[in-house]
Image (cartoon, rainbow, N blue to C red; front, side):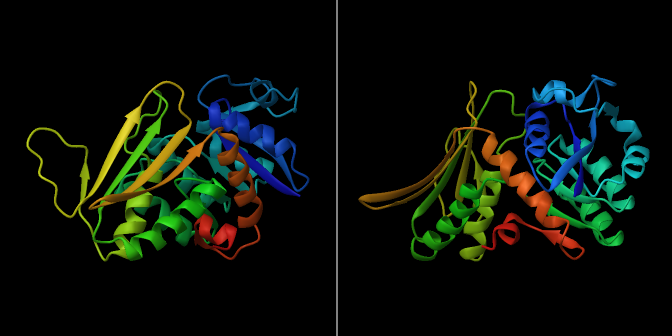
Length: 263
């Protein structure tokens, strides 16, 4: 049985992850962390009844992880918090599932170094949806044949999302750029902005949109649009729990959802 811990357990994603873990035959929740609701039962926020797992203060992360003998920590919080907490978990010998987006190059370097230095396994991905990771494969293939077309990426999320553009949009841009051996990125446009050979990236924040991503390849007299639409956060949750079950059986290293899904 895999012992799982969840950061941000009272939040939107955290509570859904707790709920999904309770349905797993191979994983059990042993610890839940947040900055508020301390001492309350994690099952209360996941709407699954009393689990006997109290919300612990994230300040006690190290001691609780050791006490509960957690095998894996799932983190979908904020970049600043992840950059602090992921290295702590790695030092405790705990494997990591990181879905936090908006990490700076410096923050990611700190996390990567901690994972390598402490010889743990981690999956780091901007999106844990199976469909999105197939979407990445499709746009990579399209870019091979449409590299001379104008390429635009448009993403839309709910009005509470803090970082823009989304990690998924940036990953899509990277997939295309790597395929085409390097492309400049332009984030939105205003004023006099003649188009060059760049990839345009645009972010929409409105209402309760779970997550939409469109890649537009536009040529003369035609265009191709490849789109993924998330209808529910459950697609991210199920992918993250699947990754958590997978990563505990891997050799130390940093993996992606391509590895988890065998893509």
